[in-house]
Image (tube, rainbow, N blue to C red):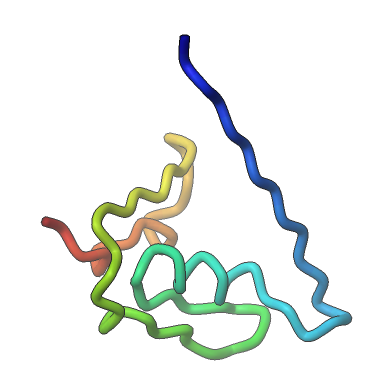
Length: 71
């Protein structure tokens, strides 16, 4: 029998949190946040084994990340 686990976390800008920073950290990538006008760069993080970010087919090319490390 399979065991399923789901963990959900909410982010709040009013508390100084950033969903973009969290995604960059978990993916070990450099991601630009247009709202904050800054880059969140975790591309040197070494303990990311695999990372994928899924986008809808009609997403703009500017959102497609080419700098996520591939193994």
